[in-house]
Length: 234
Image (cartoon, rainbow, N blue to C red):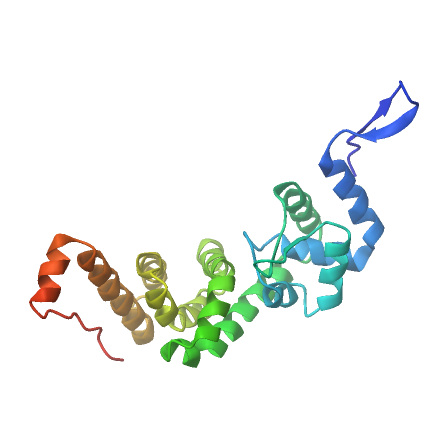
């Protein structure tokens, strides 16, 4: 482990030259199991709920709390989500790179994403508040998992199945453009694209256009004229 500490001659004591030094020392103290969990969490971008953390660490909820206790993972009480500071993420990513667990962790993340998308699907169709809340908290984790599958070329078939389920959530949360762009990239990976994936792309594209139109003068005129675009049915 690199030494980021310097000697303070004035008082004859060790002092920390940076916060990364303190966190690396904390990582040494938490033990092998917690370090493996920290390495796994490096694949999760931004803020994430507990269910994401448990998914990518292999179901180990206690070890996530251990990492919080040692300030290696931050918990926002107001949001109810966790986050890795960038210095910690860099260290954790280096741990993962040096291990033989990278493919396993990425697989866990995609498996969790598939289970999550299936779990919230019926709630999203009903615009259920709890389902929308869960999707809002885990949205970035889902998007990064799908993008990872595309860039790595691993698990694209699984990602294609996942992308269909959050389509209603993206439309309800004003994320149609982002969702349509991602689904379009997934469609491009298949010759021809699966029918369900084509449906998701058409659904999101239509709702994206509708939102754009309704936010413009043209949209106001169309609405006053009784125009209502409708998505294709499956």
